[in-house]
Length: 130
Image 1 (tube, rainbow, N blue to C red):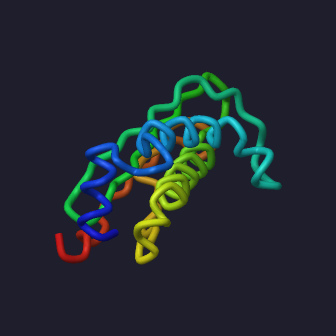
Image 2 (image 1 turned 90 degrees about the vertical axis):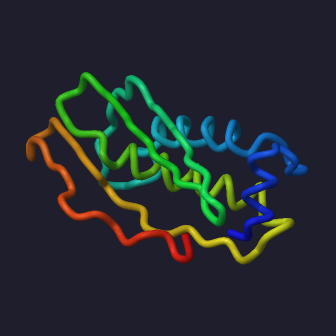
């Protein structure tokens, strides 16, 4: 996104309201609705959902952590949450910046489920220009 957009989000001056608070709520709701959106996903009892943001000069990183006591993993819930949170940021900021992109959605770590624990070994490429 443009540096002015990130600055507006940080200063909470976007016309539609508090972008990060709204995106956090959207992400939490999305995690709880993943099975309705993804035809082959199992309904999972979602416990806690953490949606966090890191602002750079030209980007906002969105990170989501989802916990459950269910017997399966919740990576689809986390990926759905991060994507919907990013879409919410886009929706709330599009009136001032249509150059924004949503990039590099990725699973970093999971535990539980049939496949057990998994952790990404390699880092994703750095942000363009930052």
